Image (cartoon, rainbow, N blue to C red; front, top):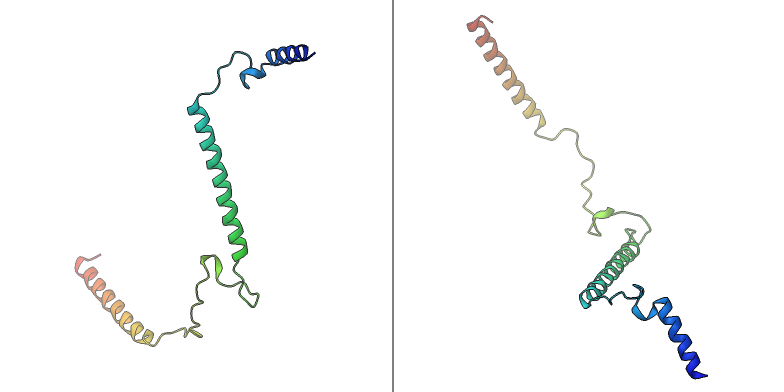
Length: 122
């Protein structure tokens, strides 16, 4: 009885090609280089997926919420908030002097341009 079962199992294996790997009957087994490369690719892909998962989890858990629940700080990091400089004056202290100097410069340029046109007759 055991001999008949073994013969039947052997015939099944031979007919389906299971004794020669997934390539079917007569296909050679993959080379060790191919197996090693396949293993390296699978491990690399698993590491990439693991790294992306960790980055996403840390990014989500870190968030940008302060202790009071406000969302300040922006995506640039959790650094300290810059000091409040108060309301800015629309005209700095030096602005009136600059306007006077600039007006004098424009008048001088217009006078020089006018004299140049008078000389050339344009």
